[in-house]
Length: 129
Image 1 (cartoon, rainbow, N blue to C red):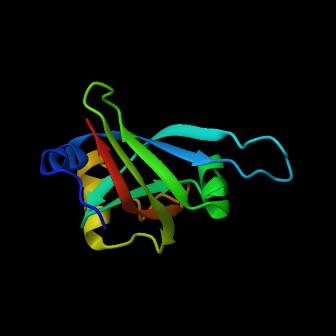
Image 2 (image 1 turned 90 degrees about the horizontal axis):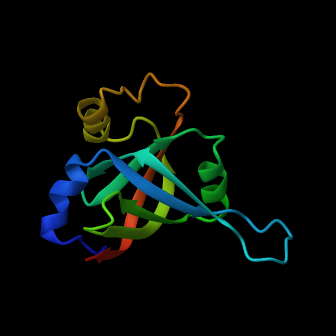
């Protein structure tokens, strides 16, 4: 699993939002699929990214069809992009993940039933400039 540059780790631990790009399924459409791009809250732990999303959201439906995902921090002047693969893990995940969401956002993902899908993203490539 590739590691982000050392100078990026602090940003992954502290920045509040990350943009998530997924691909809509083709569903028999002969035209190229359309991307879906949204900002989400996230956690960084043990060299992985975690997002907690609504299981019925467009991004969740897209990831069930195609687990490949791209994520980017918000600052377009100091670019950090991660390409990876997402998989569902049992909520609340590792105690450390729950604690990160609690500390960073004052959000207890264990009691939030609307955001019912916890995803672990394993980075496959980092793009930084």
